[in-house]
Image: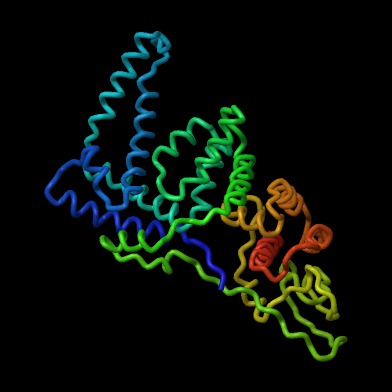
Length: 352
C-alpha cells in the first residue's frame, strides 16, 4: 500500500489536542502571558511555534505604526518605535478567544514537522509568492527545534552566497541537494507520540491516506491473443498493451512482449481510473512531497529536469502525446517503483 500524509487529519488531531490544553489552562485563568505560553505544552516545539506566530503579529503591528504622514526614517522616530515594540513584546497577555487559533496552528505545524518534515521544509523554503527571503528564513529558524539541521545548513549556504532572496524553485532544489548530501533521517517519532498522547491519544496511522499500489497484470498464455476493452475517450492507461486512442473508445489490440511506458497496467485499474478527477495542470496539482519524491527517484535529484518535464507534459494536447514524450525521456526510470506509478496516475488525471 502507498501512504500519503493527510493535512486534514493532522488539523483534526491538532484541534482536539489544543482544545484540551485550552480547557485545562483556562479553567481558572482569563489570560495567558509569555512565560506561561513557553510552559504550556510538554512539547516545546508547540510553545515555540505559538511564539513564532506572535512574532509575526509583532512585526505586523510595527508596520502599522508607520504612517505616510510622518518621517518614519527619522532616527528619533525609529528609536522610539523600536523601544515601544520592545516593551510591548515583553508583556504578552492573550485571552482564550485570541489564543486558540494560534495554538491550533502551532500544534498542526509541529505535527507536520515531525511526521512530514519534507513538506514542512518545503513550505519554509518556497517562501511567499515563490520567493524565499533569507532574513525571513533566519527568523524562522530561531523557533525550530525539530529536524532542524537541514534548514540550518541551507541558511548557511545562502549566507555564503551573500543573497537576500532567491526564487522558491531554486531554494527547493538547494534543499533537495542538502537532504541528499546529509542523508537526512527524521527524528524518532516514539517520544513525540508518547508526549502528545499524555494529553490526547495519538494514533499516527490516522494521519495517512492509504491507497492500493498497482499490481502487475497476468500475461495471457497466447502472445497474439486479442484483448478488447472499452473505456471513456479521455481515459487511457500506461498498459502492457499497444494503446490506440479513438474518439469514443480505446481498443487494446495486441499484447507486446517488451516493457514500455504503455506496458504498466494493473488488475482492476479501470475501477481506479473511473474515480480519477481531471486536473488542469500537473504542475499546480503536485504536493511538495511529490516534488521531492519524483525529483529524487525518477529524475535522480535533477530538479530542473523535473520542472522542465512537467512543463512540457502540461503543454501537450492529449495522452497519446504524453506517452510518446515519456517513451523518449524516461527510459531509465524504475517502472516498478511506487513513484513511477504515482507519476503516471497524475499524467492520466491531466488528460482524463
